[in-house]
Structures are given as structure tokens and as C-alpha cells.
Image 1 (cartoon, helix red, strand yellow):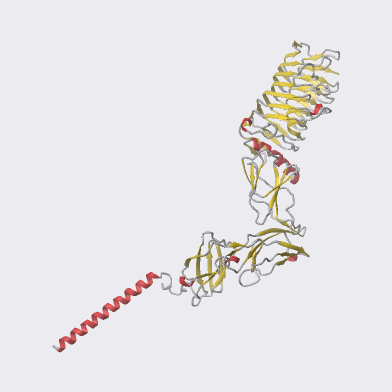
Image 2 (cartoon, one colour):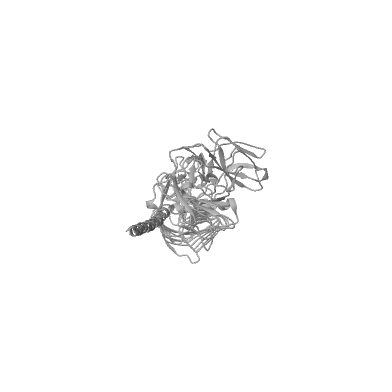
Length: 605
């Protein structure tokens, strides 16, 4: 009986041991699962992982110093936060001094740590998410207060414990916390243009780092200047650009070098001149100068501006930007020729009034390039002008070409500039002065009206070549000037062809030239005045009608007046119906007498 009791006790003890062992094993598994990564055993020859519960964030509002418990045998640690990665031999690191570190704005920061040693495999990564207070104040941007003998000095405001200083993007520190505790920097060792970025930081909680004060040291001038603008974009005539940190505003400089000061990073050009460049202002102290007004590359148009890849014009606004590229060419490479091509029909009826009810601006910079209209239509161009002469281009230079443009129903009105200068109220569709080549231009149903001024369908004053153009429409002189001066010249293609000028192979379909009472003189279907050395040849007209003439003036189907040293030949041209004051003119050449009217030349002397 006693023996059986002893056996029963031994069995109970054995069963208890089994249960305890099972419980111990179960307990070990539960512990392992409850704290993964902390108790998980490393592989053979591998360092243990950083204990997640030991990772702390100190002074979380601003300092962002991460610390952790040491791992046995570890020689260094890799720390990663977002795209910022650094390695340290200590068990803490200040993330503010790490390149690429960005403070998250949601109050949560994810940190990954890996322990390293030369005789061990890297530990498995430990990743933790830490929280911090986002309700903080922000330090002021560091202000440059002096630049003497090559030494930059900036203000160290109250509450600032140190700075993040980057020189050409490389962090510069004077202590183990990766920060810069001084507030001066000697540029004497710099041998090239150098960028500086300075951020003020604080050791106090709830005080955020300042934004960066960024600027350039210009080696050649030993001066400090603002950073140039980056990332220009254009949308419907509005120019936008990337913000320059620390800039107090921006100077917008247009093609006439007028300056407009703005504080926002955009500028609407729809009713204004095209922008030449934008330059930031940092402060008003004069120590840190504004960026110089220098050529700035703004990609207004697609393409490279070469013959193989021309600048592409797809809107009325795009056409205006030609002036920018011609100025840019003149500033950087005067030997360069820019090529432009119109890619689609341009509907000017959809353009809001720009000035005095006009929907198109003139191109006022000398044109040295090649503009191919690609036979696309420019529809409903509307001009209401009273400031002197009007032409799409002020000046087409020697070697330049404007070709293959089609204008559907253009309507241009030009008033008198002044009583003493009535001839300045001039209209020409393409150029006021042409020294280059204007060819293949078409005016369909044009309506041009001048008040005591001049009208030329294509070019006002020609020293180059005008060829293969086609014109139809009505050119009307509204009135004489208040001084009683009559209009001198009206012509379908060229007002005045000067020495070296060639007007060749143009066609006038149907053109009505009308005055008010008797106030127009020297009018013709193609060229009004052909000067000595000018050549007019192979031009045609189908129907030209002139009314409102001054009796003693000259009128011609092709040329009104030609100097005896000029050349006018019919060649392949066809002379159609020519009517003056309701009477048809049948003679080919007029005379020097009172009746100076001819289908080819009105007066040749």
C-alpha cells in the first residue's frame, strides 16, 4: 500500500515536470512573438539587432536627435530616415545635419537602424516609428549682416543654438553633432562660384528650424548674389517660377528692361510685354546684391531653334515670344540664326483685347531669323492703333526670312500720331523696314484704314526682296490730317521700294483703294514709290480700283511712281482691270503731264 502511494507521488511529480517544461517552452514562444526583433536570435556570426524599445527621439520638435542602446561588438550604426542616410560610431545622431533629411509634417518619423562591425555580419534592421509635437514656432531665416575681406557674417538671433551650413551642397560642421556653431565663413579658399545654404536651428523644444538663406558667392567679382531662378513654366501666357528660399521678392524684367516688383512666383503676360528674366531680391541692406540682369533661358517654345528642329508656334501668344528669342540671340550669340515654324491655324478672334481693342502685338525687336508660316491661317487679326506706324515686325534684317503666312480677314486701323507727322500713321502687315526676304505672304479680304497716313499691304519700306505674295481687300484713307496734308502712299504690296529692293512676282487679286473726298496720292496695286536702284518685275493684278485721288498725283496698276534710275518691267506679270475715279485706265505707262496714270507705271521720271 505504501509502495503504491510512493509510485503515485512519483508519477505526479513526473507529470508536473512535463507540464512545467511545456509551460516554459510555451512561455518562451509567447515572449518571442510579443517582442519580435528584440529577442530574436541572430544568425551565426551576425550582430544582434538594435533593441526597438531603446530607440528614443530627443528634443523632438527641432533637434531630432535619435539615440539607442549599444549592441555588443558593434563598431558603427547605419541610420536611415526617408532618403537621408548616415553612419555613426556613437549611439546617437542629430538628423538635422544629415543631407536629404526632411522633417515630416504629420508628426510621425520612421527610423531604421543597422548595427555594423568588421568581423560580423550586419544586424537585421530595426525599424521604429516615433512621434513628435508639430505645434511649434519657427526661427527667422539667417540674415547676412556683413561681407568684409572675404568673410561672410550672418546674424545669430536669440534662440538660435547653431546652424546647418552647406557649401555647394556639402554639409560643413565644427562639432560632433554635424552642426555649425559659428556665424562667419571665410571665402578666401574658394576658387570658383559657390552656393551657400544656411539654416538656423535651436536646441529648444517646440522651435522649428528656419528656412534656408541661399545665395551665391561669385568668384570673379568677389561678391554675394541671390540664386538664379529655376524651373520656369508657361501656361496661357502666365509665367511661373520656382521659389528661391529667403527671397523677399522678385524683379520681373521685360524685353524693354522695364522692372516690375512682385512677391508671388508668377507674372501674367497676356496684356503685357514678354518677360526677359526674373531676378530674386533677398534683402535691402545692399550687402547681398540681387542677381545681375543677364540672359535667362526661358523655354517659351518647343523645339531647339535650328533648321532641323525649329521653335514651334502653336498659339497667338507663342508668336509674341519671337522677340524674346531674338533678344536672347543678340545677347549670347549674334551669329546664330533662329528658325521658327507655325504649327497650326491661329484664331485671333479668341484672343482678348490686348491694347486699344487690338488682339495682336507687334514684334519690335530686330528679326534675324527664319519664320515659316507653314501656310497656316492667322484668322481675324484686329488692330486699333494710334501710336505711329504698325507692322508685325518693325525690322527684318539682312539674311532674315518671313514666309508662307496666310492672313484671313485682318482688320487694321491706325490713327494719326501727330498733326506735324501725318506720315507716321503707317500700316504694313509684315514689316516696316525689310532688308531680308518676305515671300509667300497672303492677305485675304484685308481691311486696312489709316487716318492721314500710309498703307502698304505687306511691307512699308523695302531694301530686300518681297516676292510671291497675294493681296485682296480694301485699303481706306479715313481723312486728311488736321493740317490739311494728304496721304502720300497706298499700295497693295510695298509702299516704298528703295535702292537694292526687289519686288518680284506678286499678285493683287482685287484691291479697292479709297480716299475721303480728294485726299490720297501716289497709289498703286503693287508698289507706290520705286526709288533709284529699286527693281519691280513680274507683278500682276486682276482688279485695282482707286477713288478719292488728288488730281495732280500719280496712280498705277503696278507702280504709281518710279525714278528714272529704278526698274519696272511687266515680264511675266498680267495687267488686269485698273480704274481711277470710276474711269478705266488702258495705257500701260502714264506720262509726266497732269494725267499720270498707267496700268504698269503712272509716272516714270
